[in-house]
Length: 312
Image (cartoon, rainbow, N blue to C red; front, side):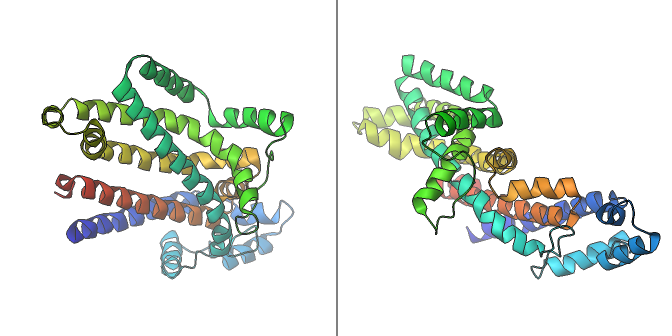
């Protein structure tokens, strides 16, 4: 297991280096008139030159990248060009908001999709058809549109939940849960639709295996056959889907955070993109890559624990 983990960490570091290099080359190499965009159209040539020297963008691209990497490995992602704060401070304040929403959503997706997938695989018949219908509906509804519907129904009409805003968990756990109820609800439906189908297919394949018939013929309890044996063999596919769902939710959170005015990582990414704040964009890219790497390694280790053949 240690050798397997070492290989995954090494490949993740290579991935991090490649993606950050490519992103840096694209955003910094393609950025034109940065200083003038910050200062405005009335800026003089001298003011533009002074700001470029201050930001360090007047140097060759390879020197800029070397300086950025040297600082980034120490946790210094630079200063925001438009917000007046360090990128690390901005992201540290926004990341917990996004993670709280995404982690809560992925937990709900995992539990509900597992239950629906197992029921559809075991029961079949009308239960399977109903779950298939729910999945089709979930696939067809865009997250942002569903979010608007939830706001109209539960916030404006019923007044059960707040329409926008975010409450910190430490300030009020109930307020935190209420502020995330609608955004998480908008995120989970399509995730449940996708994951439940994967669980259903994996469970059907597992239940058709010869070892399942052998266990049933040996008088093993049906619940033991289902949960201790069939479900364990179906877990790798389900875990892989959940890891992809987590990555997709990180991207989809940007739109949902704009709809519900949540001060998370997605909203600051949109703000930085609109204002041309490249250091913030680079910080977001690095943060996202690290999160994706952590999730993928965790899922790989879980799959290796469930199925030792994966380690090979």
